[in-house]
Length: 409
Image 1 (cartoon, rainbow, N blue to C red):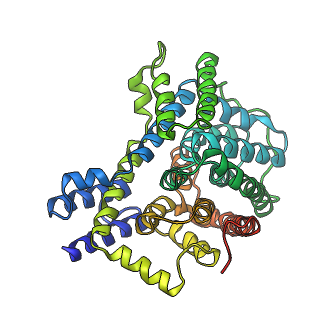
Image 2 (cartoon, rainbow, N blue to C red):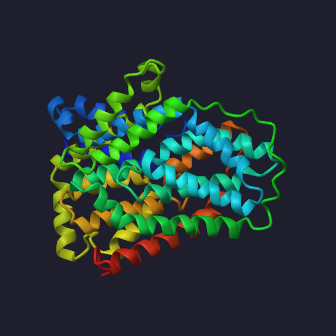
């Protein structure tokens, strides 16, 4: 049975690295789900074990934040914001700064994947209407979304999981991670500006794109709900309860149908999380991860030091992806120290900027841009992504070391 579990585990994470299997139309979520089903079919897991393996608080927080974001989307805020950003500045430097600030700021509160999914199409339309090449601005949007999301415990899926596993405090997390995240935003701006310098062109007018409608009442509800959520995080109640409570209130509406709000939820991401939890639990039942952690501890190679954590985050995030990498590591290393959790959140998130497949936000921007007629290539992204990731990770590592959260060696 151990050999079967190892085989399915290897196939799953090979699929995470490739994104899909050649000749098949199955994506990462499908690969993980099929592997989990096969583990049930061969008896490596029973139904009770599969259910108990799922970290439901993490799933609930993701679900609740997606419903809150649906309130923003339903108000027309994302389209309005993207179009206003595209029209805002009269120079490339200012336009780039606005995109980085807005993309990073929204991602810290509303989750980076949701923000880039909603903003990319209208941003492409608005920039093209002004006769600008959207590519550098889209690279900046993806980079800023990743960097900004590193600041908070609800900025991206891996941070949510890390916060739940470590029982971290929301405001303490912000205190530790906000400064390196802000520095990363500045690095994103500087790198994109330097790499694309002289090739931005000059904005031409405001374009001919119709003004995106904005329902101010629905937007007011969304902003009030966000403020309430942040206030609830300061109270001694489980964070998943706070998020679900706010999401439940958002679904009680006279104008927005709950079916429409639930339709915007990224169910594929939730299924991916659940399937990976089950697969990693099956591997844990073999005893191999515990033995590996014991060997690494004896050899002094646990990722509780920056010399191990940083390269591990860089390789893991840009091979199998930062979300699967974090799920895998936490399954094998169930009791990391608090400082290592902050390091894991910062470094895996910032490492996602290195290459196009490094984070789901990058992939979403590329796919949504392609649907709008803008091709963002692997090499084009890497020219900015490599220096963005390496510089921001270096700053984050120095910050963690200087504040005493992690040592270098």
